[in-house]
Image: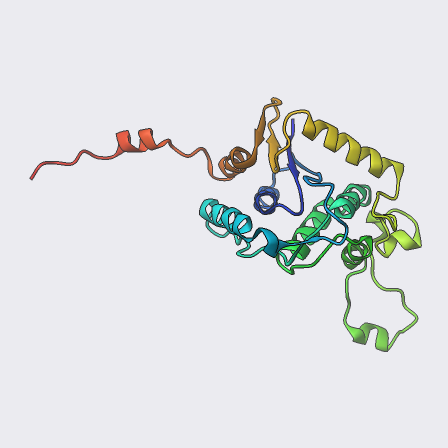
Length: 242
């Protein structure tokens, strides 16, 4: 029985959902699965300047700031360019094969919402994945032994030198393998079957909670259900007349 969370790397609400999924993982929950989808697949590969929709971005960012839990650091500005997330979704689908799904999800969200990077290009996505597969090491390691290979956890990465350097998406931005492509298609078909809103949370019983209701449910998994306003008023001590 698994909670399934659908999200788009372009979406600030999905970014908040990702933070909450990470919090659940840190608490030992193993029944949460993230699936990446494209909310706007027709976005140009050159991206769109976020300034063109400044008012809408400001509204959305104010809204997530208002529902953020203590300790959740949400962005206060959009990335300069709104990316086409096709290559990002493909990279995440392939990261499941390499056992790097959570790491890839965090890295792509960080690139977009913390670093403000434009990730439409498959080459930019490859750089992000390569940083996970071949983490940077101190220069002294290679200064004295330049012939040694860079450290990489080969047990978690599928075979193939190019793949180990982050080439898990094609030069056109699609999945590198049939398995990855089938994942993308299945995720989108399932998501479109009950909503076209991100994020969306599907409970183990099959109930779907799109948007703010899904975010609220993730918060309840972390903190417990919140009492309703009516219940809080009833539980308040009576006011005694002077």
